[in-house]
Amino acid sequence: DSGVTQTPKHLITATGQRVTLRCSPRSGDLSVYWYQQSLDQGLQFLIQYYNGEERAKGNILERFSAQQFPDLHSELNLSSLELGDSALYFCASSVTTQGGEREAFYNEQFFGPGTRLTVL
Amino acid sequence: GQQLNQSPQSMFIQEGEDVSMNCTSSSIFNTWLWYKQDPGEGPVLLIALYKAGELTSNGRLTAQFGITRKDSFLNISASIPSDVGIYFCAGQLGQDGQNFVFGPGTRLSVLP
Image (cartoon, rainbow over all chains, first blue to last red; front, side, top):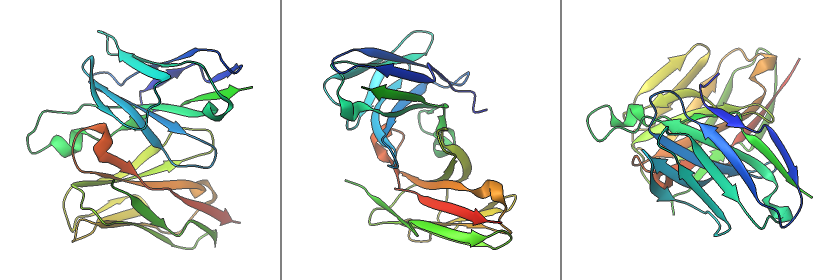
């Protein structure tokens, strides 16, 4: 158990709909990352939040958005869903210290169990 | 952008055999990490490497951070059935998400 929780485990919805995926990071971790993994594919970085603020953006579609709340949990919102959005969505968390010799160590990302989204 | 290559793409081995896989890049990284993913589950961190040349073990797993900072390898000794899964390497240049790059994975199958 990584300490990162994600809900729901599975989500089935129709094209055009909007869904929200939720992630709670490990206790003490300030950074949350969202990834998309399509069938038999690698992990595609979507977006990172650090202590409530957007920190970095990857290949995230304009139909997707995320936020991180004061209690550090994060939500990924997917709207106007298309068939191709069906995938596993993972969040990961890390401490992300500001510099220092151990910066690299604390940037290890720990992954949640994922949400499997199926768009019909 | 930064890309990682992993080889082999997939491998089938007999239980008890040793396994070696590697990860290469045209870019340098400050940290290399190895993850294992079981079907339908999240990746689990196996080993993290922080310094060029570093060799680190975790049970039957051994990984090394290449001297050039552009590669890393993972060895698994005396494989067992539960080693089945996809092994991802990840390179990290900085603390921001876009500087954290995953390889495409090596799919390992262990035959009894």
